[in-house]
Image 1 (cartoon, rainbow, N blue to C red):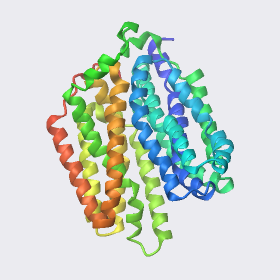
Image 2 (spheres, helix red, strand yellow):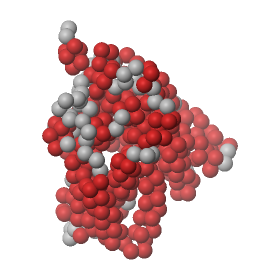
Image 3 (cartoon, helix red, strand yellow):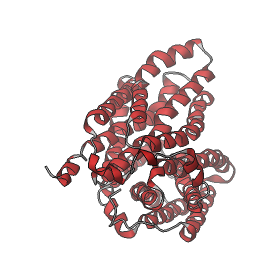
Image 4 (cartoon, rainbow, N blue to C red):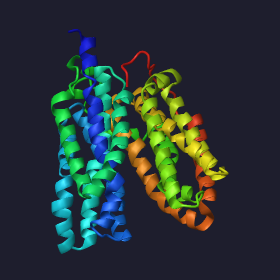
Length: 414
């Protein structure tokens, strides 16, 4: 069997790994709030502590995991630790969380839960993503095609999670455990790499990253421009979506009608996202990863400002469907841009810091600020301000964000 054939055969397990890990993300994040309210009987403040701790701890886990991932390169040690921790989600919530809640201060349990979930989800996501990205370079496949598995996981978790929750609320966590074990098995037995191509990721053990290399990143102007872009465009994308459904309901006379339309819209959005993940890597190869990021920024600004000015729910639905274009754009573009602009030995560190750490800081700040603005000046005016911020930051990135240093047609796929 020739090398090219081997490389092609070393692709199909990775979408399954993506699916298995992101299923954990989708089902836990989708139904945790309901479970905490209906099963654990936590109040809003107590449940909020869990999510606050997840956000705060991600600021510790993400840069730390990025550094260790760059040190480990293609060793799966950290991947396995995270997935084994994920496999304990079911036992934790059924056999540890509830008994502790009955015998211990609820705030202490909430803090411990937030730290644990942040380890598996907020910190773990960059570890899984960067490993598969590096595998895509070695095995010569498109990362975006593997990431389709993650998009499908979101749709399956939404469909299956509601039914599991109605059957037995704690079943959602056991489903997450099973999915983590599947991901563990995939990484252990099936996610193989072409050893002859590993030099595309790391030249030798002597090239291992050290703290001096990481600190040097902070002297690179483009690192800060990329981080600021993510702090504006990508973070405000998330903040905008946090309470969007509440605004959306104001266009309907009945909440049930709004919920049905919103659910159908999100399903259509996810379908668009899945379809576009197939051609998006080729599109980004043509237009450039930098241009892909900038287009994402401008579309995000358009969607937020357009929503503020929309006269009825039909316009809002159309704008919401643009999110199906945004996600493939940013997911593929950021992976390619980092690989073509920064030292690949620091790939995971740049991704963790610029695309995750700085974004989380911004989400943490803007979430509280946006909530206050919704109450004081209303959704429309808040959205106009948020959209203007995204637009200004995208224009700044258009001027100052460096062009790719490597030609995507002359390097391995990313």
